[in-house]
Length: 67
Image (cartoon, rainbow, N blue to C red; front, side, top):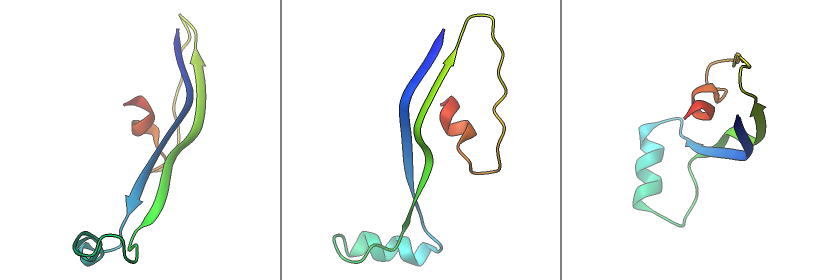
C-alpha cells in the first residue's frame, strides 16, 4: 500500500531574473515573488494491485507528487 496524507509543496514563482536578484540583495524587504502551491493538503491511498493515472495540466504538481 502507498499512502500519502496531508502533503503540501509551495514554490516561489518569479517573472524575471531581476526579481530574483532584488530579493536576494534585499532580504526582508519587498517580496518580488508569487507563491505557487504545486500540492496543497493532498491525501492519496493506493492499495496493492491497484493502478492509477495522474493527469493534469503542465505545472499542476504531477511530478512533484511522485517525488
